[in-house]
Image (cartoon, rainbow, N blue to C red; front, side, top):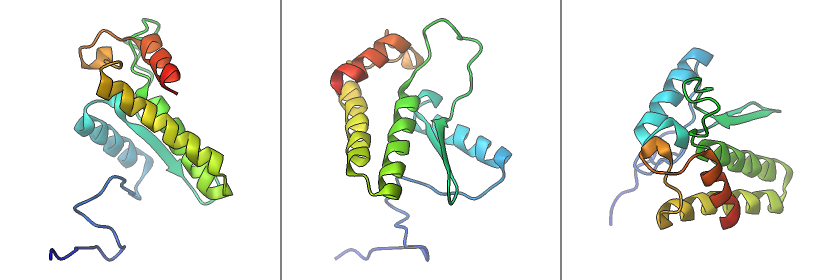
Amino acid sequence: MKKKVMTENGIDPHNISEVLVETTTRGADILSDLGGGIIGGMGLAPCAEVGEKHGLFQPSHGSAPDIAGMGKANPVAMFLSAAMMLEWLGERNGSEPCITAARQLEAAVERGFASGKIQPMEFGGPHGTEDVKNTVIALL
């Protein structure tokens, strides 16, 4: 039987899907950008800034002025940030519909990538912002 390793906070370091880091705004910005690069690109990186009473949910990427208005931006991080917000609201307020909606949104994005229906330009695919948005909506 394999021994389960846990940190003092109860986190299994071999199975981490979420990371909580307390840092300055500048440090967090650098870390979120680095995380986006590690997972494949900033268009996939959702972000949550959560305090005791309030939460702010947004994609990690910036305004991307080099592609503004061209329909090339990858909206996946926005969808995943919205899913994180719905989950947070659901857990905070005991709202199962919010939690269900979060899971459905994440599943739609996953199905889109798995089926090849979502292939963002960011990764060399043919799908722009509207294409990805329409596909996610259709998969919901």
